[in-house]
Length: 388
Image 1 (cartoon, rainbow, N blue to C red):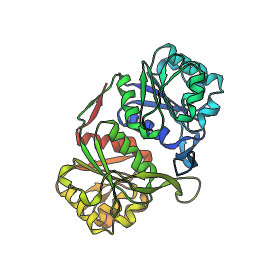
Image 2: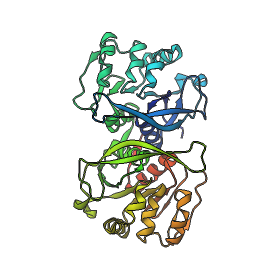
Image 3: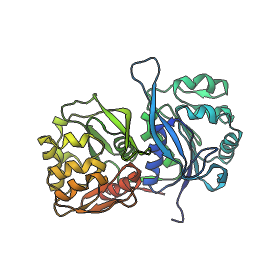
Image 4: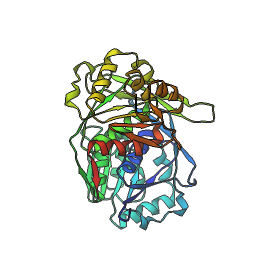
């Protein structure tokens, strides 16, 4: 695309998992080119991520997240070729703020007035680069003393989803603000959302895959869609445990604890006619959700009404159990191939693993690396897109 926007994502080891992957894959889904780099690493290398969340202690807890793959090399980038800079939080900014090459990079974006967005602890880098003096900004509350000392005008976040904008600088306190944060960044890049206001339902369960629920959930919220997340036998305000699935050299994927995902609607109150589409995340949840008669009925109603349905990874276990795959062409995580074939569908090989397919009202994907295609194809069915 001749006028494609291009942004730089500044990464490091133990960057917060949601704060790096949600904007990365959301922007790609919207048609923005995103280069993810880390000092001292090359394209194809990985950064380890951290799962940060408030778990009842006096500060956030941390556990290992996914391995995030870089797609560009830090030493080869030219700031002039990018339209904006994105700085995720987590623990990475603590050491990146000590890197002179990083600070020079940030200053070059600031000097050209290009959009710079920083979230959580990412503002430590802004302070070290001396680009917050006299600027209004927010951050994770523990970063306040550094920002004040650097001459910033601190804005107390009303909630952990609040964002602050001051000229070309957009700041936020945590990944809870990802939807607003991403939306403001898209606007700063000159983009506008077409077809917003759709109502989407997410079918959740315990130990669904962490990325496979949060990335599409917040990506759709950033597009000003109303998104409800429900789980059988749970109510709004309760949480689902999630699983971090990754490939780390074993014969199958590894599993680690993910973030707790908060539900915002009640399964028993769902009226299919009030929604424009359905998303089914993967992970281990579909194994038991496929045994729930009410889940089966809900999925059948969406498919019979020809409303857009997007299912990824092991989510197709539910589609197969619901008997809605007959005559369809679809893919899934390769281990779910048997379910798909026995369900009467034509199997489409996910080569590479990030490939997704649309057949009528159904979008299917194999795993979370395919989110950009998965979300983009679902957006197309919904009639939603970002215009630059």
